[in-house]
Image (cartoon, rainbow, N blue to C red; front, top):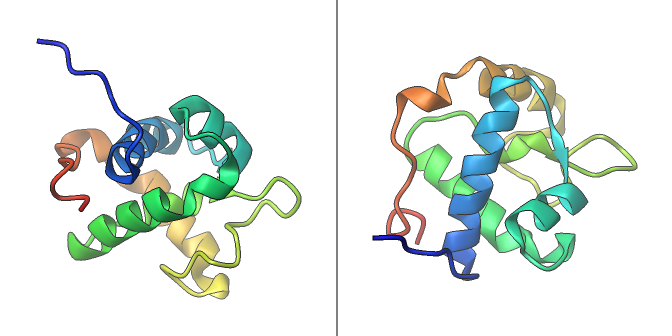
Length: 114
């Protein structure tokens, strides 16, 4: 049975995860604007909570901070609110994200993201 995604923060976090692992496999980042369009979140300012949920899931499971791939267009860096690692550690964290085999693990469930 097909279950369409809703627009809750947890569902948006899962949609972001699915998109970001594809970007990671190609060693690419994505802007907040692009991600919000792709996952239908309604604007980059509405990504903070879904990305925080995703970051917490990664942290709880000992995974690289996948949300580090989401960057501001002007700076090419995660927004100032990104706190999974210090600013100086972002380049190394990006390498960890890009090198991790995200397709070797099951994605988080909606429940795990809450």
